[in-house]
Image 1 (cartoon, one colour):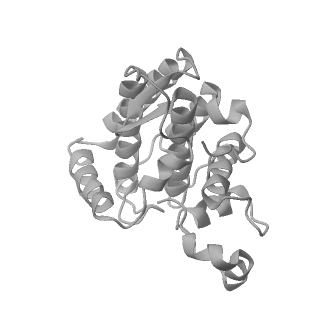
Image 2 (cartoon, rainbow, N blue to C red):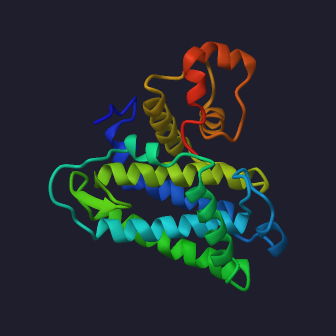
Length: 230
């Protein structure tokens, strides 16, 4: 299993951090207009509506996973989980098309927002009542509940950043961004070798922001590994 790269147990597995991550998205997308719902976000090709629907499906997947116990040892952790999710692949583009079609079914943005709020709350409650060291199954992987929760926090925080590119709302909380940073360090194999704030690192590490010449020089041979996740 990969190391936790600076993440405390609370940051990695705490349902309170997951609640913070989802609550941030709910607040950032509350009360926006229909026009704003179709604005492009920091996730290429995805509008605000798409991002929120994607996160709702992620919360639904969490509910299923938390109620799908697995036997034996985990074969995936909060770091290795992301190595199968590389950007610019055919499956990722297929997911984009499916998301746009599904998100468009909602007649207005408000019922989609309400559905996400409800589903995210249920996922947090399920996470709170699940043992952190219990193994569960999702997307063909077996992982600990605490690692599943960490991946959900990362997903929510990154897409929260995508939303605030076009919405004049607060970004993710510090605790959720620390979890993102720990995950990116784990994928890189060491802490980032140049100074960057958590938001900046999240954008660089996920390909939302390009590396500068100086940053590439500091990374050396590791620069080709960016983006670390999509």
